[in-house]
Length: 112
Image (cartoon, rainbow, N blue to C red; front, top):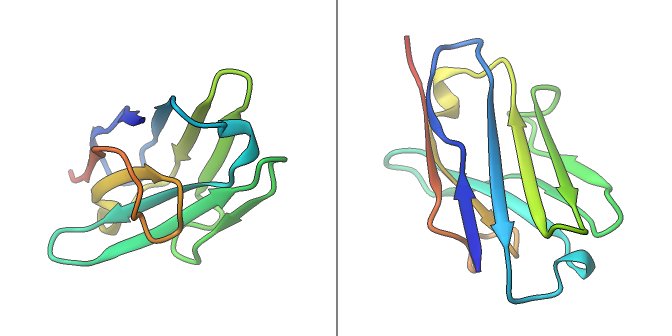
């Protein structure tokens, strides 16, 4: 199970911290992903982090978002910094890059 939280309304340039609590699988052995879906668009890979903490980011978020994980607690995080209106969307944690196995999502809205 994957349960996201932490979304909300934030002004451009602001920050937000997303959390994904996991259960039911061996979290510490899996690469984990954040994907998002903007209104009217397809799912988009945002970032991923390997079991040992190697992180990779999409070009749109590199330098602004930080993905991290707590293997002991089975929790995945995404820190959003310097957000832009185009970051608006539903954010999902997922077990694959394409979001085939994902949680219910948490909504992020960037607006003034």
